[in-house]
Length: 437
Image (cartoon, rainbow, N blue to C red; front, side):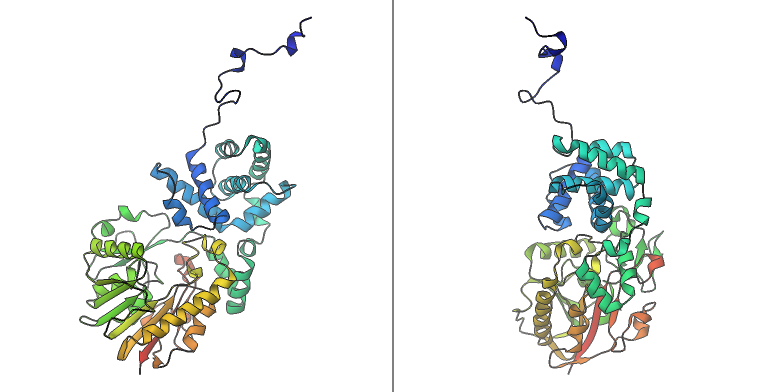
C-alpha cells in the first residue's frame, strides 16, 4: 500500500536547491553586522583592544568597517543598559555569540535609530539556526519597546563597571555621574595646529587654541590635515607640552612619545627634541606623523627606565603609560579591558619612569608629568611624593584659560570628560610640573 499523498517523501526537485548534501544554503550574512560581531567578540570575549580588533578584520569595504566600529562602540558605551533591556526576555544565558548579536541588534534599535526591518532579519542570519527564533523574538520585543526602555534605567550607573564607579565616587563625589554621562557620547575631533597655520574653516576655537570639529568628522578630508598643518590631538592631550613652555634651541626629551602629537608640538615650537619610545611599531607611526608634518626630531627606540643618553635635558615631558581611563569617550573598550589590579601595576611603572626621568633633567630644568587617567593613584598620588631633587613648579591659571577651576591648590591640573560639556567635553588627564633643584 502506498502512503497517503500528504506523507509521501518529496522529490529532490521539490525540496529546492541544496548545498553540502541535505543542508539548505546558509543565509548571506550582512558584512557590517558580521564585522561588528567580530569586534565585540574580540573585545568582550578575547580581551583585545577595539582598534587592534579593527585592524585584524579581513579586507572589506571601508564603509562596512566604519559602520561596524560605530555599532561596536555603541554597544561598549552602553553595555550595562543594553543587557538590562535584554535580560527580562532571556530565561537562560545564551551562548556568547548569540549574546553579542542580541547586543548589536539592541544597540541599533535603541541607540542608532536603525529601522527594525533592517536589524532583526540580519541579526537572525548571524546566529546558529537553533537560536534564530530566540533572536527574532527578543529583538522584536526590543523594537516594540523602543528607546523609552532606556529611560527607565540608571544608565550612568549601569554602563560604568562597579570598581570604576567606586573609585570615581571616592575621588570626585557627585561628579561621578557627570563623568559617566560624558562617556556615553562619542568624542569630537580635535586638531592641534602648526604655528602660523590658518584656523580651519568650520571649526570651533577652544580657549586653549585647539580647533574642534563635531564627532564623526573625517580628518582625512580636512584641508589643514591634507596640507600637513594639523594633527589629531584631544584638547586635554595638547596641554602637557604647552605647560613645558618649550623655546627655540631648548633641549627637550619627550619620553614614551608615540604616537607623536606632543613631539610635534615641541618640535613646532623650535625645540631640539629627542623622542623616546620603546615599542618599534608605535615609534614607526611617530616617525610617519613627523614626516607628514615636515617636523624634525631625533627618535630613539629605548625603554625609558633603562635609557642612558649620556646627557641631561633642559626640559622633559613624561606622558607615562597608564590605564587610559581618561580616554573612554574615544576608546569605549577601556572599561571592559582594564581591571582593578592593573592600576597598582601601572602606578609602580609610572613611579619607576618618573624617577628615571628626574635623573635626566639638567639643574633648573623643567619636567611635566602627565597621565591620561582618572585614577588618583596614577596622578595625584604620584605628584604628592615626587622623586628626590624635583621641586613643585605650580601651574598658573593664566596658562590654562578656561580651565582655571581644574587647578588644585597644589598647582596640579586635573581635566575630566565632563569639563567644557557644552562644547563636547575633553579627555581626563592629570598634569603636574616640577623643577630640578
